Length: 275
Image 1 (cartoon, rainbow, N blue to C red):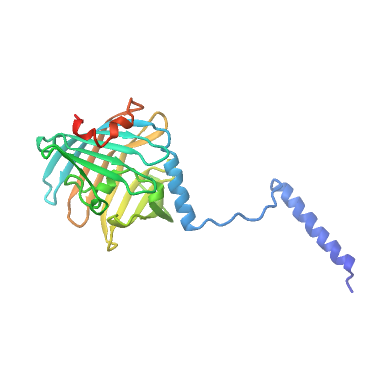
Image 2: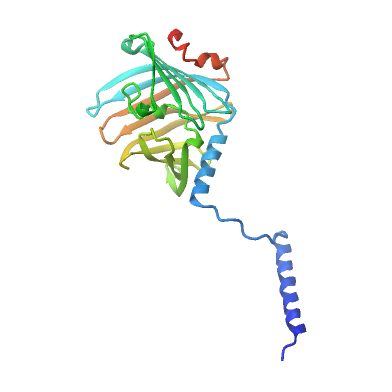
């Protein structure tokens, strides 16, 4: 019959064996880490991508919009863009149209917020008045393009819930595919799928699904350039509407970072004086 001492000896031998293995593995006998859920991983990817953007301060740029109908006919618009980083809240953006003449002087101002609904105003020089864009109208077309008003704001992490779906090749890279769902009731989208490249966490494409969960639009980002040895910006964005057959291309040029922009450049009362 096996004695208690025998079992104790076996137990001691087991502990000794585990201790020796732990030394070979670096002395780590901790329990396995908590398995990350799809929701946790999706949120982590979104936060990591957002963190890479912190610290740019402000920048200006030139933008050309090319609007194409389903027959391939084009119209062109030229804009000036100003962006101001607001670390404690969402960023502030100003878009001013220079061409063609029928939209010259039109200005679009956005105050993005992390929690509250965004503030958006459109100055129409022909009417000489500033129009507030209500929450119910933010799914509407921005100046006739395939971009909605809500697409023109900084995409704050807090405005969505997230779920990691899969890893997937995207061109010569590998991407995380993350589903994000807008939390604002006024959004025109039920959900979005975002492809982040795993090297730099840059958005490569976004699929937009309407309230009926139809794949309505696809936005692709191309020709990324790094500024200040840190911040990546796409100089070519194309939004394709799969329902209407229309598309809009945005070409960005002349990025200038850390200029003299301040809150005074992004006020509602100053819209009428924008030149």
